[in-house]
Image 1 (cartoon, protein in one colour):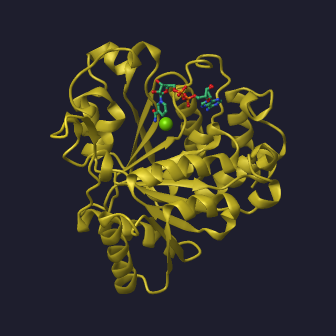
Image 2: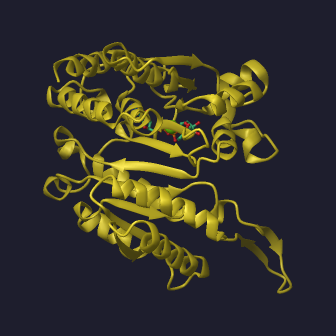
Length: 364
Ligand code: NAI
Ligand code: MG
């Protein structure tokens, strides 16, 4: 059965790195008969210039129908400075995609390659062998809670306020996603909250515990307060397998953890929804980095974050974790051979790195 992958390159280096990821997927398709049909559309500033919208209704429809969306990056000085009004979905194609596809589970794997250990901000002996995934809740919490605002209150002073609000089903669905992932790995889940001072944290902890006891008895569950979690990730990152946490804590912990691996250009991510009735699961796969206007169009972008995002697409979108493993091995080989872009201290361009990964795929 044909698998539909919608490629949304976006702005800046986005189209350069999604082209690299697509080339890797096409190579695997030829060898392993994946029957992938690629479609392409505009998103972000490029789409705004062409249509006046950051993503069109037609592209939204195609994204909903696709088996997976491969996304590059959106934005750049030209559009960031526009003073646009309206809801966040009207100002960003990515936000509209996340909202309307209900991509509530954001996966960020933290796994440094051996050749990269010296690029980590931590000591190589602390970083070697690190392999964990942060599962961040992406559709709720303090980023969306009401009421919020800046108002003068009865004390005569200006107050800025936000609301952290999680419903029980919102916690249940992210807990299921995280437990299922942990079950497929080393069977250890660490849930991070601030239950000592936050009511939402108490409900979070209680709900995650209940889901674990009822549905995933084979997964070992620990709880950490977020302050301790931040410390433990830096002190001994090897202790973690899967970490599940809310939108705000996940945002902070995942950027901090990212530096364990050394370079922004290397980091992949997946944003997943709930499995649909036909068994397919909406998913958007993108490198963590932005559109890098400073190097766009120069052929110097590190394509590995996008290529590793394609590996996540193989696992979660196409059900081929075996091929995802091949891609990760091929990336490791290219790095071992010293083929890398300037952000990693190398001299290769985007196309040379991509070619090295594809060549390594043929040798594994
Ligand atoms: P950025 O991630 O685009 O760039 C930060 C620095 O890292 C730059 O020096 C850049 O050259 C470098 N870099 C990033 N990716 C790289 C790669 N693959 N290879 C080599 N070097 C790389 O972040 P910045 O500068 O804050 O944002 C630029 C634009 O991207 C803004 O318009 C921002 O809104 C947008 N953005 C979009 C994101 C998305 O689409 N998910 C995420 C983050 C930023
Ligand atoms: Mg991105």
